Image (cartoon, rainbow, N blue to C red; front, side, top):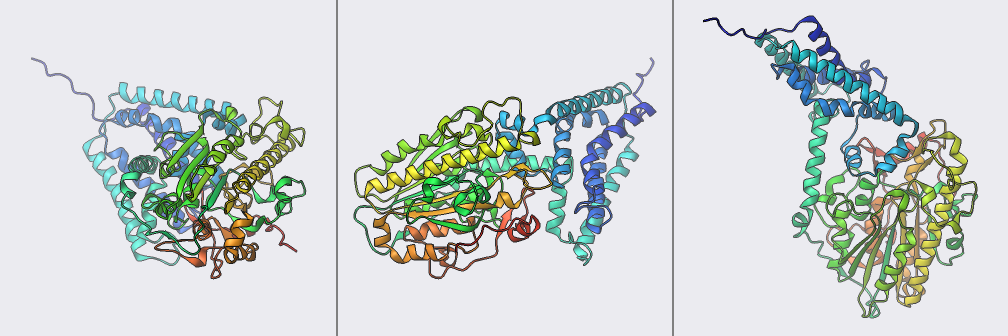
Length: 578
């Protein structure tokens, strides 16, 4: 009886060539990162270390599979996202991050198409080409019955492990020439690789999703031990925090912009505009949690372990609301809506796509009802607006199409097209003017209650509008125009009469360098809430306020110096008040 022929245990030359092509393609993000001259340049010791580490991980991955075609088949999704990873590296000189991946999963498809613009067709062609190469390589490897010999697999695994061990050993030595010489940085560098590190980033997105799903149970027992202090107002105090969207200080007339983008607020007596305020991050999903919690750029996950301003105010006896004109995207599927449920009343008014969203004045009627509820209850309300979210032309009614030509009437344009710069700026300024209108209407509602009341307004981040030679538009570029944002305080006559000292401190610090890190403590101080872990030095309403070094959470996930970015971009701070 003849024995059944066994498939060969080696690969023919065509299969080897295809295997090498696919291997190089999957490793290309690492190669681009090390050869492009950035912080991971192969000419530096950190860059050389990254190259050795990423190559070792890739070789180790190949050695784990006897049949290469099985690995290639499993890598199909990675070939599909490869162009986006390369685009991100070329644009930001850094691999994609957990926040970028999570944003892609929860983002609006129309917004994504607008940001891709003219690059959409080339992106489709590149993805199609890559998937074609993947298919041809897979077929060649499978039809040739390509298999790696045990000795070769052992060698690949050994080389991969040895490369990783060498890098760990080098980092333990902590050489002065190597900025990456720490075990913590080694872990960060592993996560920055492709494809192994990308899979780790996907896993971290999943972990974050799970933490957000169960955040209510995890923080249920957390307490600030908060209570109201000072003079008691029998009528009840109304405090409204408005979180804006993508509004930059350099387009804000209260801060010196030539166009009158805040005409109504500019005529409001007693309004206090801060001249040097900065955001804590340049992505909404990371910036807003840092604004409403004690989390910072250097401790960004703190908001996942304790309650936010909503929990603080609830403990102190306030009734709380979260009124949002942004997307819910699943009650526990985003870093923002997961915290919104801490409020007594939660309402999302926006369930449309970006081109069909309601205008922000949709929040005024429910705000009026909340402010006029019977009883002496103290009230704390957070309003999350669409503000200046791209597409700017959809953020205001026709009556506010003040500067023309705007984006109204244009078709088939995208956010990065230089030819629409003038239209884009006009539409952006019109949207800012409508934000001014909404804020002025909120002030009117607070006045009408005849109760002590405070309005605090701060956007999550700013926006780029072709401001320098780099031609940046939108956000997520970590620029000065994204970091410098308005910060506005206003109080009723009744509040200023009851709490003159706190209000005088707000006025006194209007020109101090502040950031979103000060928001939590300042809002609590204005509400006269005392709590465990209070830091008066971070509150602009406190006589002990002290400016602190400002840092922000970069698009790459690192905590960077805000002042360094402002100096780099030569974007002068808004002129001081005379």
